Amino acid sequence: MTNNVDPENSTIQAITVSESKVQIVKDVTGNLISSFSSGMFSLALGLMLLSETHSPIAFGLESAITPIVSILTMIPVGNITDRYPHKRIIIFCSLIKIIALTIFWLTIDYFSGFSKLVPVAILLVILSTTGNFSTTAYTASVKELVSPDFIPRLGSLTQSASSLSSVLAPIVGVALYSAVKFDTFVLISIIASIAWLGITLSMKFHYQRNENKSISRTNNSLKNQLTQFMEGLHYILNRKMMRDLILIACMINFLFVAVTVGLPYTIVHQIHAGNSAVGIIDGFFSAGILAGSILLSIFPGRKHLLVKIVIPLVIMSVAIFLIGIFNLTYTTPLLFTVLCSGTLATAGVFNSVLNISSSVYMQLTVPTHMLGRVMSTFIALVTCISPLGSLLFTFAFKFISNGAYIFISTGLFLFIYILLFLPLLVRDMRADIKRTERAE
Image 1 (cartoon, one colour):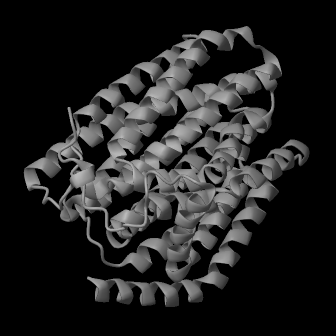
Image 2 (image 1 turned 180 degrees about the vertical axis):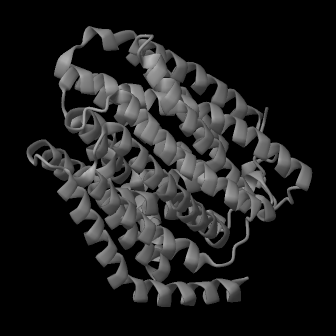
């Protein structure tokens, strides 16, 4: 199916209510399929590497590679997203992903032990690259898929679909991992990617007139690429609230790696609760994200943005601190699993509120012709610090006998950082909201 209008000679076209609802249904269906398969694949990949290498790097490899790829591709991702039709970018990335997974499926069994890190790392680089392009293109195309009134609901329902599949993925993934070979998970991902490609082909993209006449599709020189990138960076720096959110998000991403890397390692090798406990805790965290997404889909208002950002920041720091307390005082693996599941479920609710509210606000307030560059820069800057976190906490949990002290100190540090930064965030956020209201 072709796009709704020719992007070369596009005119601003209103998207009807019925069209918006159809697009939402397709998007939710695609995200259910894609997130469910990706969740199972990531869990199985981590467990496979943990079994082969007996190292916490098994669960930290992806969090180390993804930010590096984001930084290296930051400039071309934003420029290409703002220059070419978003649908074509998403389709091309889907095809590359399918080919990469197929080659990985056919060759992974030829490696063993630490040598498996080589094909896994190559695959993660490819998936991260295509993921950056497709995610940025999709984020920038939200205004082309639904009418503005449906953007908050689309964001929350999309997150709900991803969260629902993430709740089921760890449970199903752990059960399947004990019954089938790892190759089966790769095959499932290939089939799911093909299904998502079919859904994308059926979706209509209502292209808007490109307001930025400075973007040229024929001039791809390095100078022109850097000029376009600097336009997006200049826009971010001139919006102080976005600058503040980047600084806070960088710190959160750096410190929360203690949970993503350290908690599975602690559960399996220190508490000896088994792989099933890892899946259960991941499932509860995803359940919390799902609950927060559903809450925002029912009440998709744009008000109280400050509350939706500040409170989740505090909750995340408290959650990391409590995990350390539970690790220090637990009596049985079962009790530790229950306490961590409840804590991360609560953190998941507020994490969902934070992510969706911030994302929707940017999608509604950033000009369409700048959205690709702004989002790619924002995502890259926020995630670039994660590799340092992966290295730090991988070695920390490997060489510090009691990981409880790592969680406790990490949670306290994040909480203090948020308190010190809060006055500046409040001031800049209020100014940005007033600025946006005047622009509307």
